[in-house]
Image (cartoon, rainbow, N blue to C red; front, side, top):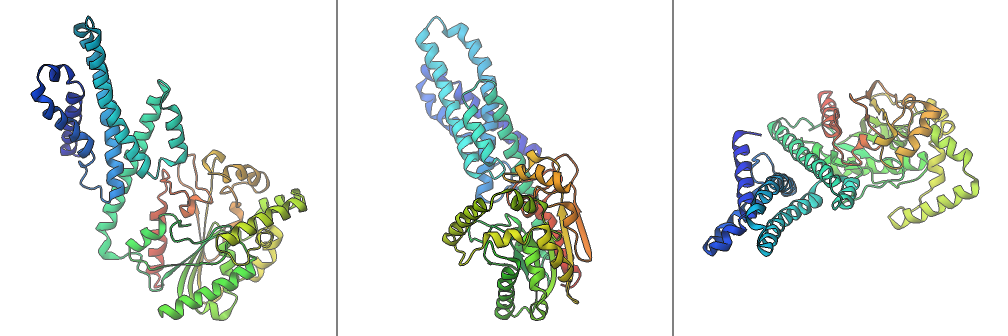
Length: 441
């Protein structure tokens, strides 16, 4: 933070502190009320405007809310000291003492809710858990201070991170580092769909587009056999290349989507329209956890789960979902023979990416539960797929950021929209696509 910003924050804090503790002064001089209101409104309206690098309405409101909470915390501590001192002068008059304390409390109450509502409505990184903990601990002394500190830190870090990312994007905008020769086709994994307002790939597509990429989506059903998904993806590839005239696409496929695309490339006509295939955390040699589930869960229970899923999927847009076919094609047995048969076609650049999750607690549900099972059967994994199953193609990237967290099966496609220390998922995809551009793809 620059000196100008520090000075700006000090002015905002001083302005609010004076207004919140001005009751006795206003009581004796009513003409100062407009000035006190002005001093109160300045931080409540303008305290988030100090950072010139913060762009976009959401981020500006988040910054405003975070700084409201900072000013609240600083002023609350200073006001507590001041109010204790003032008790020596006002305590003989109990009514005056209570009115003075109530005035100070009301001012801080309003600023706090200004800040907390702003960050709760705009922050991505707070997540559901922190919001719930904040709501539950709000009235618990001491605990609420630690929670407030965490909320402030998370939101300020988010604002700083996003502002820096925006600065980097603007500095290289003219380079169009992701403007590949052929457009990008993002292919989702099993049990998900491409929706207009709920993006499977999180913030990644927007980041690629900002850096010059043209992005399409697979739009295939959420749960089918590999063979049936491959047919839908082949049709989608033909649709994109015919309508846009681009000739070919660069595919980036996650999880089972990688298997679906490998199967689609066995069709020479489809392979002719694909420049590259990058698989992300794809179980090329199967998922041992799928084997375990099919062997341990009674067939009657499997059928009930499948029926429930298929029914829900139809209501969400799938025309003919097949839960059990999708699961069977993810088993070790289901992938073993196809892995041998589905060779990379000549003329298509193929590479793969995998990641390692180091602690179950760092995986979002249900990966925090499946992590231990997969580790038991297959060793190191991303919460769902073993590390031994990721590698395929002429280039392999295993993501292992420093620290104890790691990267889960969902983190690697920004499913949770989480800023992970040591791993910028959006920048990773920018580098991935810029490498395709450098290869003339």
